[in-house]
Image (cartoon, rainbow, N blue to C red; front, side, top):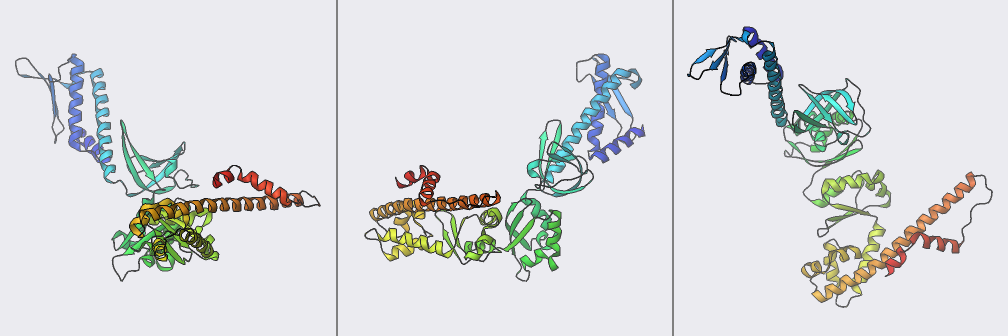
Length: 443
């Protein structure tokens, strides 16, 4: 009978299940087999006890007189034994499911390493220590493919109780995956000497992190990069070449936004707290760098800082201020001091004033309500004109681009005469591009 105890110990160890639960399950299985053999519906008619040390099995029947009638296991036969086996398997699987749920729920958010098994649809199945996890398409790094047997490093994102099984969701696209990689590669981050204050990520392309140090002797950015970039290189290699920008955290939103837009050099930052908007002024030669490829740099900087970010060149910024000044000065009673207060609040264009409204002008700029209403109306009227001008400029740019394309097509097609567009045709084309938008802007 010691063989039973050895088997239970082995199952408990391999499946990480409490041995006592397995013993109790085996006792219930034997009771179920006895009830099956004697066609009993009374759950209390039979009882079973297994010796925890020797493995001996005692099975009995409770008689109406209150005594116990011992039942030999050989009396149960083949069919009840099969019933006992099915009950045991079902109970063991249930215990294993509960064990998996408890264990992996505690490890949620941890960095784990598994082995790629296969793809089911778009989901990657990964073999972990005791079970399989799956990585949905949305949690994979775009363009990344694994072969069977490849090592997969990821975070345990979620654990779901799906009835008869436990579903373990893995991720390589979640921002916390970057955080865990830094904790594994940078001891100062794991020890909380360096703190990752904010993060924004577009998986497979670029990540921005803002870091700070609680120890003035530790350079947060330098420690994360490592000697000759050794630490950051390991993380980039794990991510398949994804770019990582590490910037210095600052409590000042203006400084933080300037840092977040690196490698671009920022000339000035104007914050509008009412709109949650930051207007960034950069030189013409820094504009494309600040915006980034397909707007990626400014988009990630906005997520990192929590501000809506607009980028302007100095001439665009000055033009907006002059337009605002002209609109406000056209209202009788508006003073330079009021204009200065508006600028300090981040109102740098007629569109800002139109969106914010008169309440802020009354509360923060020292205007009476009647004057504030007139200023907002004047800015709204001017905003319509500016919007119409901007639309016409955009249409003209599209028309010029179309002309250049037509000339190129004519030359590539072997035509000797280039396409010539008259002024009248240009005006007609511009009207077509604007469509009904022109009349709407002027109304």
